[in-house]
Length: 296
Image (cartoon, rainbow, N blue to C red; front, side, top):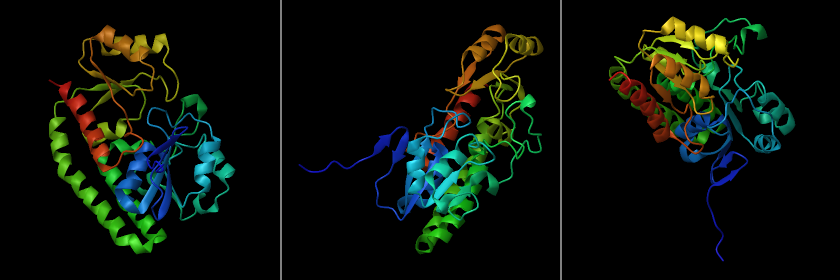
């Protein structure tokens, strides 16, 4: 009998066929896409967090440690998004090639300019990120900039394929640049939004969409009836849109929608676990379509 060769998914981990020069572990599906865009056939990618999970709130698992133990490169979002579980997973893996500060540790958020910086780390103010909002990946311009930075890092680790890494990142940046004006035009009349969390703010910021409130009273704090009632009172008579991700509870957005008569947009913030360039472009297109259609 011939052996079966294909894609293996184990406890949320996606593994590409083992033929690549660099074994990459990505914390999230979008970081996996970033690695595939830049590395292409020169990398094999494992994703630790499937796209239907919130990367804020996980625990380090033995499967994560096993993946990290074999890694040449770790591609993380950074800005403390994974702080609750990644340090423990790295300690358990014991792989010095990918620890913080090593050449094999790549933190994408550290390579770009973040928004919402300078907040005080105070649990009384919710789940804040003093270094800045970590959810940069829904801004295609910043995502392309992170790809260029990753190409430089991969070129250091695998000089033989350096030209390919740089060419892949440059080609992706050009594709993003070619699409930005079209995306902006499609969102020119997009309404103001109430968001659940601050995880779509980079997309809103890039395309000039106003955020008029949040379902969460503070980042990471579940909404109370009092807070939702306050939002309704503040926004009654206005037009807008409610935005949340699939893994965020729908009851708060549904209440606001009923009270204000606003439409609800539910969209994923990450590509599929095996996604690459096409999946990322489709993800941005899906957000633009959803927000732009709500303006008509």
